[in-house]
Every structure is written in structure tokens, then in C-alpha cells.
Amino acid sequence: MHLHLRAAAETDIRDDHAWLTTFMGVAWDHHEVEYAAGIADSIEKDHHLLHEVYAESPDADAWLPVFGGRQPADPPAEGLPHPALMLMDPAEVGRAAAFLAAVPFDDLWSRAGERIVHSPGPGWSADLVRGIFLGHHQDLRAFYARAAAAGHVVVKAGWF
Image 1 (cartoon, rainbow, N blue to C red):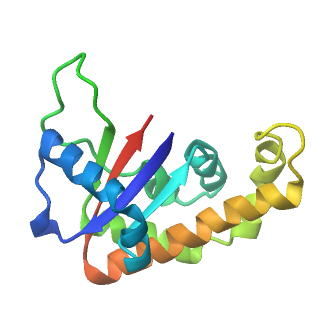
Image 2 (image 1 turned 135 degrees about the vertical axis):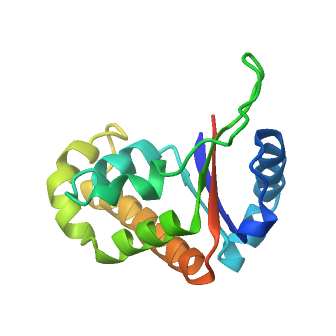
């Protein structure tokens, strides 16, 4: 279970659920190369909890990094298997980048960390859990900064 993010030029993306599903599937097949190129990122199973950390911010754009965007214009027929897809336009990508650049992770963690630190279950140290979420935050900050600087859109696929 993970949330996969992929940046691309707006002209390279179609507002079509089937096309985006294929695009994100191919991107996932090459995710290690795309991570190295700085055009992709993913958050395994922690994306809901990372959103809770960001939700501690009073900034209205706190929802953008994880759950921001809109669904494609033509969702698939009911009953067909498909990933949850979201599209963020360049303006939203810029706002997400600005939010992540401005928000002090330590402030958010001081408010949400106590709830989050116990989520993995017994045997996980508080420092280890904090380090995992700090890593997610730093990765997203760098990813969105690059995408915003390039004027890219971001496509998100929730693979469950």
C-alpha cells in the first residue's frame, strides 16, 4: 500500500483515468530510475499518518502534499479495479512546495508525534518513527520544490 507521486510537464499528461493508470503503472515499473532523476517519490503505508502530521498546521494548504489535487475528469466504470488517482496543477504544486518549505517539521511533530509514534506497534522506538516521518517530509519537500521550479503537474496514484 503506497502513494506514488510523479511530476511531469503539463503538456505530457492527459486528463484521462485509463491513460493516467497506464502512465503511473509504467512510472512505478521504473520508479528507482525516476526517484534518482528527482521526478518521482512514494510513501509506503504512512501517507495517511503523514497527512495527520501536516494537518497540525494552521496553513490552509496543509492538505496539498499528500491528498491534494483533483480526480481525473473521467473516472472508470464502477466495479473495475483502478488506483485512486489525483492531479495537481502547477499552481497547486507551487503552493505545496511553499507549504513544505515554510513548515517547521519539529513544530508539527511536537503536536502530532505523540499520536503517530505508537502507530507502527510495539518494538518501534520513538526516535526511529520520528526519523521515518522526517525522511518522508524531507523527500516530499525536495520533490515538490523540483516540480514547482520546473512548472510541472503532479500525478498521484494510491496503490492498495
